[in-house]
Image 1 (cartoon, one colour):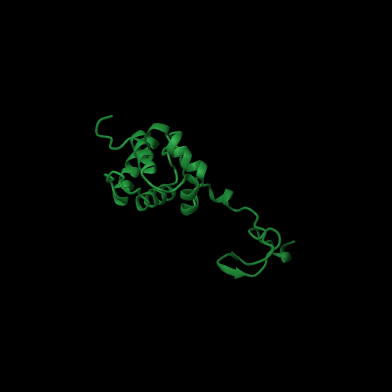
Image 2: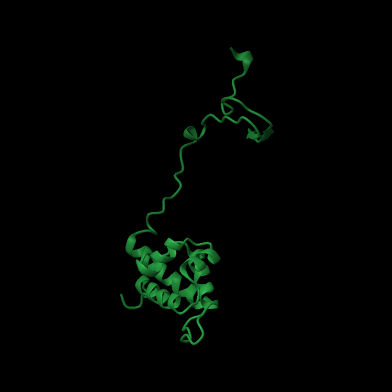
Length: 147
C-alpha cells in the first residue's frame, strides 16, 4: 500500500489526537458543528470513517479553533486536513467498493419513457407548451373526432 497517501486509520487516529487537544465537550462540539454527538463519537472512538465531508471538516475546523492552552502545536491546518481527508476517503472507497457501487442512470427506450403523467395542481409541459392543470394521462392525446 505504499504511495496510497493517508489511510483511513491514520486520519481517524490523528482526529482522535486533535479531539483530545481541544477544549469543547463532545456535546458542545456536536452542537456547534451541527454534527451528531454519536457520529463524532463513531469517528473518534469506533473507527467509523466519516462519509460526510462537510460535517467532518467543520468539526476539524472547530477543534482547531478550540485548542487547549499549552496543547502541542498541530501538524496540519484546515486546508491540510481537507487534503488528507480526501486521500483517506479514496483509499476507504477503494477498500469498500463504495465508489463502484454508485449506479448510473439507465436510459430507457422511447416507448418506455412515455408513461402517464398526472398532476393535480401546478403546471406541466406537454408537447413543448405549458399547460396549467392536467388530470389523467397527458402523454397520450386522443382526438375526440377520430372515434
